[in-house]
Image 1 (cartoon, rainbow, N blue to C red):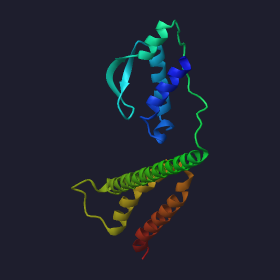
Image 2 (cartoon, rainbow, N blue to C red):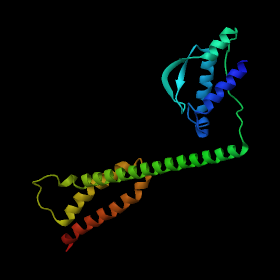
Image 3 (cartoon, one colour):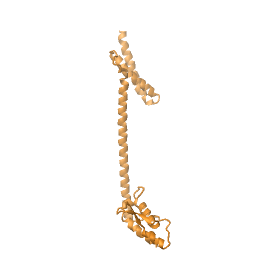
Image 4 (cartoon, one colour):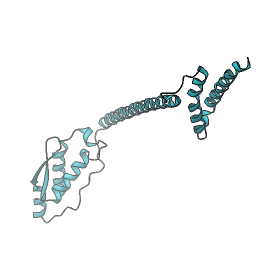
Amino acid sequence: FPAHLVVNVWREYIRKFKLEDLFSPSKDNGLQIIEEMLNQRMKSQMVSALDDIGNKTGEALDSLEFLQLKLRGIEIMEVRIHNVMYDPALEEQTIKQWSGEWLKIAKKEEDLLKEDEKLNEKIARNESTKRFAQLAAKNFENPIQPVQDEFSTLQNLIQPLRETLLDESRANNDMEQEIKRLDEIWKWLLDSQQEPNRQ
């Protein structure tokens, strides 16, 4: 008798869900909702009402199944759904559909990660450009600074950049090449400044 009641309730609820909703990977898929409702109908006097597509309406209804079981002195401890089987062709179709959906989700997540990476790179470039401009202008902030020759101007431009690279090179070996280039320019500037004095 209890099994007959469970089967009838199962048939009632199974019609409310699409196949993909029954086995979806979400926390509350169709099978879990049906199992919950089966337990309510067999174990509780009042049950939650579902609409035609399996959503709870918020309305509470009397459980006729619970009343019938109670009149017969039968108490149901728990109802579990397991080993759900259906047509093999339908199963294969469902697996293919899931695989396609998972691939779409994975591709979408990959695209979002790439967009985030590009955005972070753009922000980093903008910050680097801003920092470079601030460093390059460091020795030119004095509005009453006397006019300098081209060599002194280049020295004032390179000096803060060189000092910053020297500080950061202690933590980053990749800056060695940049420092070497600046040192070469710095040496050239010093030699160029001394050249007129030698003549």
